[in-house]
Amino acid sequence: MADSPILMREQRYHQIKAVLARLRLDAAARVVVLVEKDGQQLAVHGELGDLDTTSLASLAAGNVAATGGMAKLIGEKEFPTLSHEGERESIHISVIGRVLLVVVFDERSSLGLVKLRSKQVSHEIAAAFAEIERESQDSLNNAPPFAGITDDEIDSLFSQP
Amino acid sequence: MTFINYASREINCKIVYYGPGLCGKTTNLQHIYDSTAPQAKGKLISLATETDRTLFFDFMPLELGTVRGFKTRFHLYTVPGQVFYEASRRLILKGVDGVVFVADSQEERMDANIEALYNLEENLRSHGYELMKIPYVLQLNKRDLPNVIPTCELIAELQRKGEPIIEAVASNGVGVFDTLKAVAKQVLTELRKS
Image (cartoon, rainbow over all chains, first blue to last red; front, top):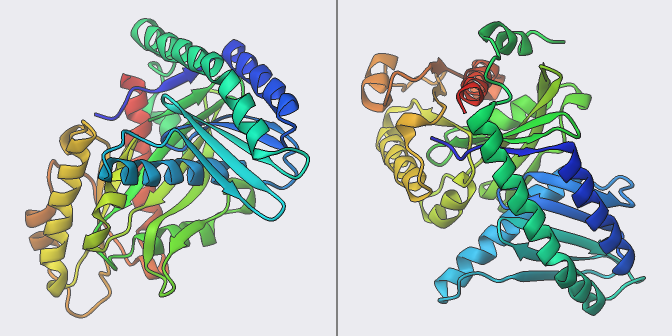
């Protein structure tokens, strides 16, 4: 069967958002996104404008997966950080266990600062995600949130306008 | 891996379209994209070669509706079908919640279908999943072409576990949404069990 679902409660969401907000400020970044390694966006903070963060999350995960595959080919476990520098905007990605911390920044910041600040919050993010995983398992074992969902409810999804 | 976010009241699931090269995986996604209201979908991202063959994956997020106050969002992916993109195909299956196998009904593609199906089973196993236990739909595509194998023969060769079988002509949309509904329904039913 597929992997167990991940459940993120409001309290954890706000805790993670607060970490992202602090990182954004400290790193003088434009946007900070937390992504699960399979491509799901967990939380985002910053000047979003028309940035499509859902696509960014999926592509960041694909990017990390591809470079992780290359790492294995040369005998490395993975590459823990990835950086892409553009003319105006740049992206830095840190792999923190099962999550990716994606920081989008421009000339107001620098790669060195973003790397430093990302590293400084990585333990906090790892701890928060470990709690999310533990809570997900507890919740699924004790009170699965969608256990009572009926066939009619599922069918009705496909008739909604 | 399904992700349930209580703060944004969203359920996010990952569905992967798998199959041999040129079977119509990207065409399925393109039709879904073209036929869906703008507010229900995100961008369709295609990482393709200059000749429009899928190089890494196609991706589009799609919102289907609300269940128990939660928006259901499906992240649809395709894999590259060409044999030599094996490493990429395996990566994309990671965290999958449901799989659509798009079979090419043409006689000359039968061997490619069988090879791709074995490849799917093997790649699922490499992530610790079993085809027999994962939400799964078999789509028999290109039914409009003159040289197709009868459906009963395709089913005898390709059906693995009594999964839903949808006949399709993805290029004009026939069977595309029926396939998506069949797999999405299984994914949500699975959520009930978890």
